[in-house]
Amino acid sequence: MKKVTFTPIGVIRTPFKTRDDAPIQPSRAEGARGTVEIRPDLAEGLEDLDGFSHITLIYHLHLSKSFKLKVIPYLDDVPRGVFATRAPRRPNQIGVSVVRLIKIEGTVLHIENVDMLDGTPLLDIKPYVPGFVDQAEVRSGWLEDALRRDKKKK
Ligand SMILES: C[S@@+](CC[C@H](N)C(=O)[O-])C[C@H]1O[C@@H](n2cnc3c(N)ncnc32)[C@H](O)[C@@H]1O
Image 1 (cartoon, rainbow, N blue to C red):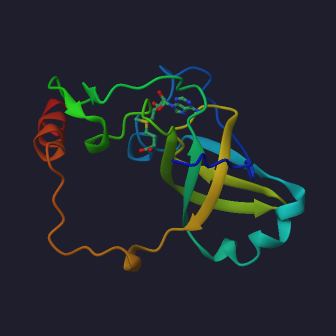
Image 2 (spheres, rainbow, N blue to C red):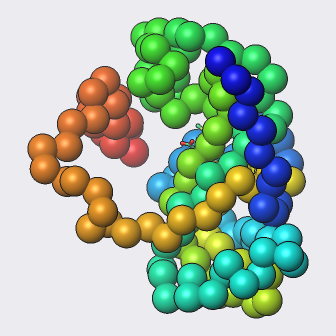
Image 3 (cartoon, helix red, strand yellow):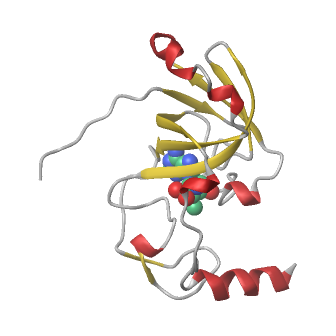
């Protein structure tokens, strides 16, 4: 297959310096604030984004250098296919997080509920629109039991 290369559109700044520090998902990162610094040449592309309460960030999990096709995910002790997990070590190290957009100041986006490491290269931003997601009969596979067990522990 032909290689695909991307140039980051910016960088994500968060309080998390090591992988162990970072929350596992935005839903577990309540109140964790960060910023997104967008390249000045792309500033015009931010117009109208301020009307959205949440945005989807697509980024390079740049510190993941290797992967396994079966992983024991957080929340489980059974090996799962990597594509059935959100594990950061995957064949293409792409991360996706829906975060809360607090405000935009120039080319700096202030965001909340961040689960990525400081310095993570940002590849794209999309507005989060629940109405674009088909919600009919959503199933969450092995995570349904895992999340139920996790909830009980608290
Ligand atoms: C389970 S992943 C989920 C990432 C994203 N929300 C997703 O679902 O694609 C989150 C973990 O990835 C790790 N991580 C975050 N940023 C990273 C980066 N830039 N490079 C490598 N690992 C990273 C941290 O250990 C964090 O707890």
